[in-house]
Amino acid sequence: MSLVKPSIPKGTRDFSTIEMAKRNYIFNTIKDVYALYGFQQIETPAMENLSTLMGKYGEEGDKLLFKILNSGNFMNGVAEDDLADGGTNRLAAKLCEKGLRYDLTVPFARYVTMHRDEIPFPFKRYQIQPVWRADRPQKGRYREFFQCDADVVGSDSLLNEVELIQIIDEVFHRFGIRVAIKMNNRKILSGMAEIIGAPELLVDITVAIDKLDKIGLENVNAELREKGLGEEALARLQPILLLEGSNEAKLQTLKEVLATSETGLKGIGELSYILSKVNGLRARLDVDLTLARGLNYYTGAIFEVKALDTEMGSITGGGRYDNLTGVFGMPGVSGVGISFGADRIFDVLNTLDLYPADALLSTQVLFVTFGQAELDYALPLANALRLAGIRTEVYPEAGAKMKKQMSYANQKNIPWVAVIGGDEMAAGEVSLKNMITGEQTKVKAGELASKIQ
Image: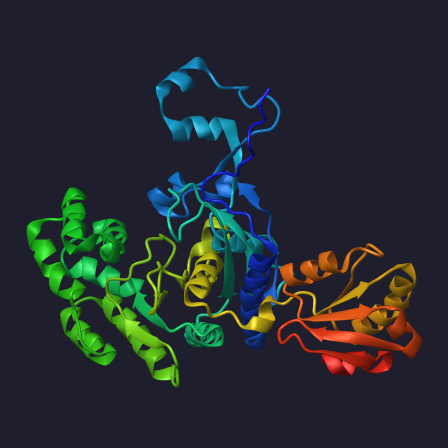
């Protein structure tokens, strides 16, 4: 009988120790910046009730939800007609009551609604957890990936948008990634739909133009025609989609184009305020009228971040979603948030080789010994180094061949090796070898920590 080689589902990945060191560098950097702005961490379950998730991401998003079969006899209550019908959504509703979360924003809205009496408003939370999407795996797109969200609910102030842009700028500055922050406003998109005479097609318009970078203008126009947008309306839309110039010039032109749309003018005013308060950014901030972020719950400012030095999709996104908690019975709570795509940032940092060397180090010093007596001599020295905050290992096999022990240090990229033999024990010393330079010196046991530090 031949053994089947194990595998993992497409769109998922294992991460090695080095890769986890890189990922933790990403998570810790983002956490540190979130904390600077007063955000606090929460977590929510990997699975939510499907009633919580369905209908929050638009028709396309609902198709990408991973649904979980009911436990026990999941076919109970399913008739033959249901199986023959071919309606997958109808059948899924009977077979599945739960699903894996698609993002962290909807679970957060559910959390706020459930815990409204326990949390202070405005409530600033961050959340770093995996999400799942039944998407077609490709470069930069996975079925299981982490998001690193920050959201503020309970405040209408546009200062929250300003701070989120500053957070984006600071995070990517720390990573050393040059980025462009793209910004738009869903109210402007609503105004566009109004003035071309197709307000009922707002969702279809936003979903289509959000694909402009991926499929091009011609294909976007073809999709809009399929959705029922007439040629006259399509012609009026083109100059807006192709608008160029500085941020201020774009907004000034929009004021003229959307002069008859109260909603559109309000969106322009919001963008103008944000631009006036965001000063000294190291990132490039662009008003991009083709940015739509095709999620139905956005109602105000929307953001997306692209790396400038490598081809990659959006590595951060977000926006304002004034009415999201209303679907859970808590109307009138405004919210705005961003989400860092940790997995795409991981790929960008790998491509550009931007990880700092010390972020990838685990063990700093390894004790290698010639026998049991030397091992016993090393143990209290190792504990002393750990008390000094130095990450330390003792090779556990007393008397193992020196080549084997040194090979272990090389495989783990350990920068220091403390060699202990009879001479070192007699003198109260350690032979400390720098594995990078090859230099080896005798060090008094009590001075070992200061030498390594």
